[in-house]
Image (cartoon, rainbow, N blue to C red; front, side):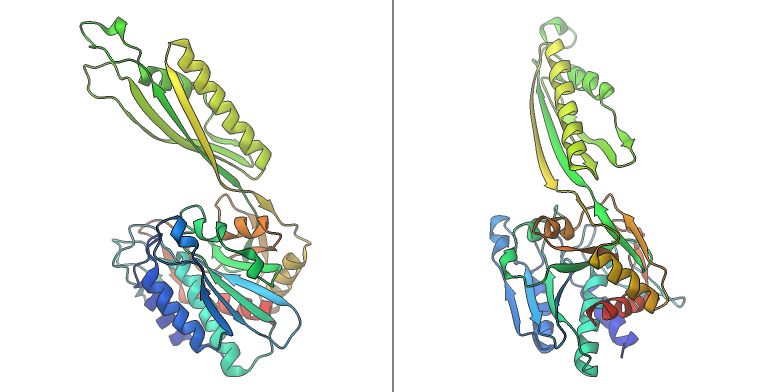
Length: 368
């Protein structure tokens, strides 16, 4: 049966291990030993990290079951910054926070702790279950680098549940966006701003003209765009000869995301040419959109599992990416589940002990 104190201790233990993206070796080593102690038939690391300069590869483990079918459970190893020296503070009302100077790291240590507690319950209580495959990817916060590089031929499962969503337990994401990042590097010509401004070509002016014509924010109900970084120039009395602009577009429609990026590119090209500047525009698809139907096998199983433990299922969409974006590209069906994280990526991040408990109960129903 579920052991709340053990669950709290596991969560606290993994929160306290520093694990920024690509620096997850210590956590991965401890986690691998725990998986072995819980009876995994196989625990292995791949070498996908070598392409990114990371300390550890993706962790894969398999726990054979007596029931037909196979299911994949996943949570990522890394946490965002500020995340060095994290500590879980348990409050009398059941709320869990950091000390206030770091993120809590419930994203995604909540998922890790819940999967480990599930495996302990199954072992101790000898509960019949499907074969369970577990994947803990590295560097999810860096656009899913770990899961993007995993060898999916290892997997038996075509059904997956990723514990990595903000919100109350019973919430699950059926869809997530394509995210495309871009950089526009604009080159002009420098000149003295007082003596000979007419000899210069102001790269910043070209960028400003383009930015003013680019639609940002929420473009429609499934599409957003943002310019988030701009830097350049050498001095207030120098016509700037270079400026770099960076941003992104997201859409639940892959086609729309591509269209927005193409419009942004055309705008930068047109506006820079007007004043004689040049632009080098590059873009990269970081994650690819997916959509799972509510009546899909995983959607129906999730809804049934929620109702069995007294939860009202909330199948929704998210504008954030996860490792499931990469799973979906390899023909895997499933959902991203809320697992007890709120205000993620901020020092105000928090969780609840009750959420950790309920999430374990939910995934227990799914594997049974």
